[in-house]
Image (cartoon, rainbow, N blue to C red; front, side):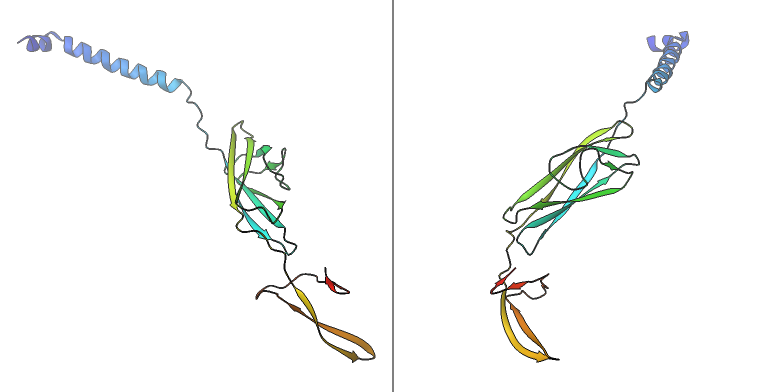
Length: 180
């Protein structure tokens, strides 16, 4: 009975009307407050490792800019050519560089790069490379195959031993009993 009196007196309609106006005002005020900018700026960092014939290792690092904004590198935790403090990475571009490491170093190494984008956003990101096993110095042996005289000149032919299948050695110099 009291509810029917409320309905007929118009109080419920007035309350509903006031509540509707309050929601509209809250929505307007909320939309007038600028939203905090959410940033997902980052560099995707990866690399690969190769053992050299001299037993050392070269790691090639890559860092891809995720944004349509230029980034300036502000910090780097390793010594890598091209990926240095002050270097810029164009929008959506990839920068690369190399790092020389002793072949005896094994395990995982990590490159961490800090950057600031042209819109003021900042981020620090990392990527890792598993170096695998120790790099080995090749144990090549040089043997004389044969000596012959060709057109009045002496030719000495050698055979390089202990070369794994699929490997072509670079420059090999023979100096009186040793390979350099």
